Image (cartoon, rainbow, N blue to C red; front, side, top):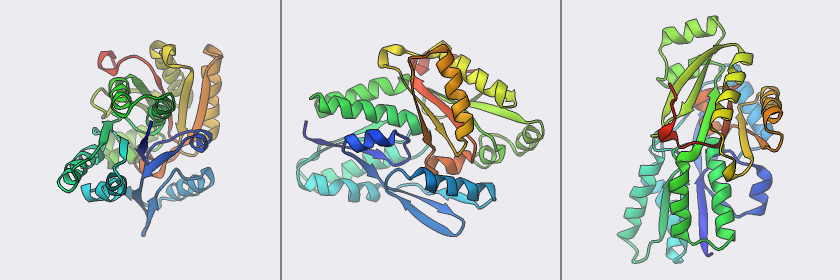
Length: 295
């Protein structure tokens, strides 16, 4: 079908998949020290290793919000040519990108008679967006139309389950997820908080485990409780430069589900700025998040 598929560059996705499908990216900026970088497609693992090494050396990092005019500049060349666009945004519970994109579409409608842009809220991030983009591309290849594809994504975004642990609690403290006292005490006691993405697309802390072994075990238990094989066997493990931990997690998953297709990716700088190095996330199709007991 003749429409373009766009996604925020904050996603994590199998690089081999990108070589097969024409996915377009909405660029995003991030700051590292005094420098500002424009991320216009998924970065290489080598570049991301250097990025997280700098974070380990306490070089400050942050991201900036995307204004509606940025989306206008991205979509307008396609609207001018009367091309249709399917766009998957970072969760509205984590960023204003979804609302900015919707505002951009309304602005374009003031200038053009025909504007065919479907904006879809991923209600998630990273590898969850990767799973949804994989589905969107395969649907388009199979002949699914723009509106039907967008409707499928909206219906099933809530079926992506996220379980992840962070290493440096100070990043969560800076983002307002935990208090300064909790961050200091948790670091001293080697506490690993386990977080999930809730039904609104925001973050919830669901457990606190002492050490990596118990943290990874808990994540695998949640996976076993919630995994939905009817969507396929693909599972994403997104890590911020901790491949060894991700490989351990992969081994644990394959021990209970040998048929899984486990894809390990490096976490994008846009999300890594908020989680810090040595974070690992387990992401898969599963139970409807509106029905999950996460506390």
